Image 1: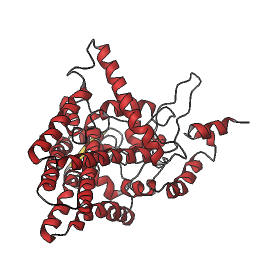
Image 2 (image 1 turned 135 degrees about the horizontal axis):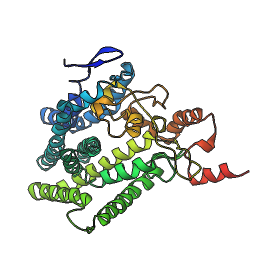
Image 3 (image 1 turned 180 degrees about the vertical axis):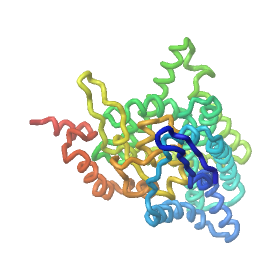
Image 4 (image 1 turned 45 degrees about the horizontal axis):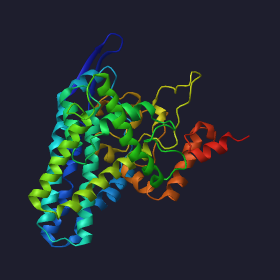
Length: 386
C-alpha cells in the first residue's frame, strides 16, 4: 500500500496511507453489475433473475451501509496535493468510461438475441438504466476538472444516458444557485420527488442551453455549431443510439428509451436527496451567502460510497468543487443522511415515509425556523403572512 509523506516544519513528518486505495476499484467495476443478471438468465433460463441485480442494489447495499460503521476518516490537508496528483485515481475514472458504453451495447445485444417477456425486458432495461444513470456520476467527477482529457471523457460518458447538457447545467448552473429557491436541482421542503422531477428535468435542460449559449456568445461563436459542448455530447448519443438500432434492430429502441428515462431518474433521485430543504441565506446586497458544507446532505456510508466515487461526501464537494473524490472530507457539523444513496432513493419514492424521516431532520437543523428552510411557493407565502 502506497504511503504519502510530508515534512511539516511544526509537526514533523506526516504519513498517510489511503486504506481505500484499491477498494475504489469497486467504482470501476460497478457498471458491470448488469452482466450478473444476463449471466444468470443464460445459466438458468429464467427471466425473473434479471431483477436480481436491482434487488442487490436497493436491498443488499443499504444493508451493508447499515452494517459497516460510517467512514469519518479524512486525509491530512498537507498530504492532499500529493493525493490529488497521484495519476492512479484519475486512471480509475478513465477506465470507467468505456465500461458504460460496453454495458449499453451488450444490453442492446442481449435484448435483440433473447426473447424476453415484458417482466424480464423491464428488469433488464431498468438495471442498464441504473448504470447509465451512474454514468452521469462518472461524468460529474470528470466534468468538474480543468484537464482537457477529463472534460472530453465527461462529454463522452454523458452520451450514454443522452444527458450531454449535464456539465454546463451542473457546474455553472446548479453550483451557482444550489440550496436556493431559484435552483431547479435543489428540492424544496415538502416537495415530493414526483413534483420535483417536473421542475428539475425541464429546468436543467433550459438552464444548460441558456448558459452554453451565453458562453458561446461571449466568444463570438454561434450556438448551433460544433463549438457547442452540449451538442458535441448529443451528437455522440445520436450516433450511439442509431448505431445500436441499425446493428440490432428496432426491438432495441424501447430498451434504449426505457434505460435512458431511468438513467435520468437516477440523477433526479440524487439531486432530490442532496439538498432537500436546505437554504443559503440572502445577504444585505441581495446575493446569497457562499455555499458551505452545511448546505448539502452528507453521507459517510462505506459500501455505497465505494460504488460511486465518494459521491455521497457531497458537503465537501459543493463547498470545494475542484477536490477529487479521493480527497473529499467528512465534517462533523453538517447534515447527515440516515442511509446511503440507494436506501435514500427508496425512501424518496414513498413521499409519506420520506417526509416522516427527513422533515424533522430539516427543522432540527434550523431550530424549527421555517424562514431558514428552502420551501415551495405555497408554503413560502404562508410563512410571510403575519
